[in-house]
Image 1 (spheres, rainbow, N blue to C red):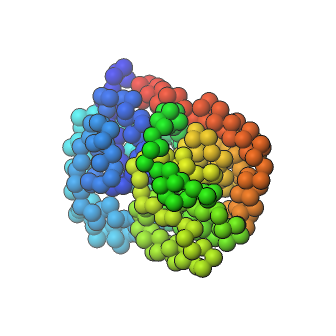
Image 2 (image 1 turned 180 degrees about the vertical axis):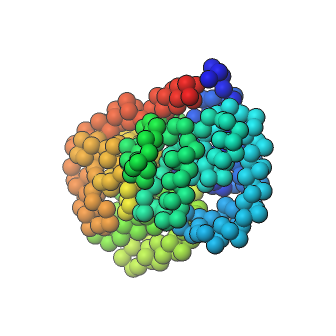
Image 3 (image 1 turned 30 degrees about the horizontal axis):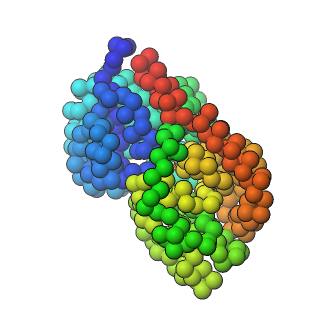
Length: 384
Ligand code: UDP
C-alpha cells in the first residue's frame, strides 16, 4: 500500500460517545484523513471544533433510528429503499479513498459492501462487546456476516471486545489487533478548573463522588445514587452526562430515586459537557458502575490521569486497565452497599488511597497514551 493512503473514517453517530472521542484523537494525528458523518449533532460540532476534515451526508433519520436494541427484519425491510439510497450516497464518497475505517457496527453494515465492491482496504474499529448483553440476536447475526466477510483487519479496543468478536466467528480466522484506547496526557496539564469549584457548586463542605458516562441503564448510574443511602449525608454525587441513545426513561427514573428524602439535595445532575474533566477535577472519587462488561472505559483512564481514586466494576475492559487495590478498585457489579463500603474505605484510608492513585496515574501514562495508540493505528493503516 502507498505510504500515504487516502483514509476515510465512517461513523454514523449523531452524538459524541467514547468511540467518537477516540476517533477524533486518531483523526487529529492523520490530518490528511477525512471523517464521514451521517447527521448533524454534537459529533459534527466536535469535528468542527477540533478542525477535522469531515463531510456530513444528512441521511434519513429512520435509517439511523434502527437502534442496537430495536432493529429487526421488518423495520429493515420497510426502510429498504431509504437504505439503498443511503448506501449509494456512502458509496459515492468511498470511491475517493484507499482505506476505509468503519468506527461503528452501523457504518460497517451500511458501507462495507460498497467498499469491498470498489476493492478498498477495510478496517473495522471495534468499540463494543458483541454479545447478547449489548445487542439483540438479529444484530449479532448481521455483524457476524460483516465482520467475517468484509473486514481486512479488525482493531479491537480491548481484549474483551476481541474475545467477543472471535466467539461470534468461531470458525473464521479473523485478523484482529488489540489496541487499547489512549487518552491525551494534556488533561492533567490543562488546569482550567476556574469555572467549577466545590465552592461555586455550593459543596465546599462535601465529599463528591462523580460518574461521567452517558446516561444508560447498563452504565449503572442508579447504583451510585443508591449507594448514597448507605453513606453519611455530607457525601454527594455528580451524575454528569445525557441520555443520548433513547434512555430518557432511565434518566427520569434516576431523578425519581434521587428525590427520596434521604437523598434530597445530594445528587447533582449535570447534562453532557464537552469538558467533563473540569468537573472531574473537583471530585474526590470517580466511579464507573457498569452492570454489563464495559468494552474499554475511557472514563476510567481519565480518572486515573486526573489523579482521582477510581472504582470500576470487575468485568470487561475495566479489568485490563485497573489492577485491584494496586492502581484502583474493582468491585462486583450491581451492589450499592458494596460501592458505599468501598467509598468509605477510600475516605478512611487516605495513605493507601494516595499510593494507589499515584500508581494509577503512572499506569495511565505508561499504558494508555494517546501517542502510542495513534502510532499503532497509523502503522496498521499504512501497512494494510
Ligand atoms: N464524556 C463527556 N461529557 C460528559 C460525560 C462523558 O465528554 O458529559 C466523555 C468522557 O470524558 C469519556 C467518554 O465520554 O471520554 C465516555 O467514554 P467511555 O469509554 O467511558 O464510555 P462510552 O460512551 O464509550 O460507552
